[in-house]
Amino acid sequence: MPDGTPRVTTDGGRSCDTNRPDPLFDALPDPAVLADLGADDPTVCRINDAFARTFGYDAEAVVGDPVRDLLASPPADALAALRSPAADACEVRRETAAGRARDYLFRCVPADAADRVYAVYTDITERAAHAATLTALHETARELMAAQSAEEVVDIGVHTARDVLGYEMTAIHRYDEATASLVPAVTTGRTTAILGDVPALSADSIAWRAFETGEAVVCDDVRDHPDVFNDATPVRSEMLFPLGDHGVLLVFATEPSAFDETDRSLGQLLAANIESALQQADREATLRERERALERQNERLEEFASIVSHDLRTPLDLAGAHLELAAEDGDTGDHLDDVAAAHSRMSALIDDVLTWAREGDAVEATEPVSLPSLLSECWADRQPDGATLEVETERTVPADRSRLRRLFDNLLDNAVTYAGPEATVRVGDCDGGVYVADDGPGIPPEERDAVFEFGHALAAESTGFGLAIVGQIVEAHGWSIRLTESAEGGARFEIRF
Image (cartoon, rainbow, N blue to C red; front, side):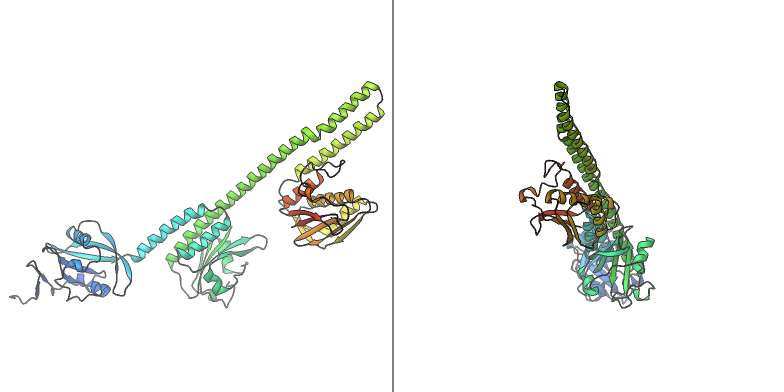
């Protein structure tokens, strides 16, 4: 060549300068190709060091090769982009020389000569992964808000932290008012494998600081933190995100400085979604409880209407009939006695109806109540002749004391009334609660499910409300009650707290 410059001639008769210095092209950190578009099949003029290093090509060997052989996107798309460098960039995925699939933004820029363009690959793998993560978190937010309970929310939250954000060691601790601590609700399998049984966390822990201040805490090395719960913990890095009044989201790692600012931002975003979902779950739970309370109230109103129309109407009609008879025959003695008896029954019914109506509401405040002490008071007020009370429990239970007193009053009255004047009534411990048993004739199996229904009287003189009130008090406390047979063949009421 006259000027001594090496040139490569393409199949189309054109040539590319391969040794002409191009410092900016060579120093470009993104993989790039300089292509000649003059031929029918565009060819490679040169590639920069980043392209050769990233995709494993020999910079000299590829000069003059068809461009289509170097570009990972479909040839038609690649050539279309090369011929329209002003077109929008497109995203492509291709494998590097190390065998790793990476995401790139592929775009073309006109070069300094006609019919030549630069094709540049900009690695956007992290950006694409971040965008995919944000999309997944957006989907999770909808799933969280559709959860039916707080338990479902925390389960979704922990598994999202693991599956979407890649935090293998994750847990959510819920605040427990009774113990004033953060109690583990859900943990990943990796967390349990490394830490074993995850303990509750109290006021002298890092998690408590995040919960109390409402601010996220990120520890590069928890062993250096003054509030570390366990100096010998295998955990080195930790992120703790408060969930409002509900608890804390905890993320762990066994190596120091494992989390960066992106991890913190994604963790805070997930925690905010979990907190919102927990607030909604609480609101819906409160609403459902109010609906159930309203249903119970409506049921009691219907039952009250039934009582007024039937149970009270019967003695009232009876009293009216006897008054008419007394007026007709002038003999008032027996008739007035019957009127007095009817009025007495109506008075007892009214007292029981009012009690039954009051005891149906859920218990909101409790106090520790000693059963031996309470039973002693109940029995002392009765002082039944010939009957005996044997107390074989030392249990103390959290309860509304006045309602619990009413419960045992009614059970003891029932035992003395139906077991007879020489009855022995025993109160003792059973699995998860206590029992009240007598040595009377007992209650037939076919009647046992009905005794807690209002108006079901075991004797003619009963109003049928005593055991119904017992059932309501048990339900109001969230307990359960079962009627069975005592060892002596009498009635045995088992209350489980």
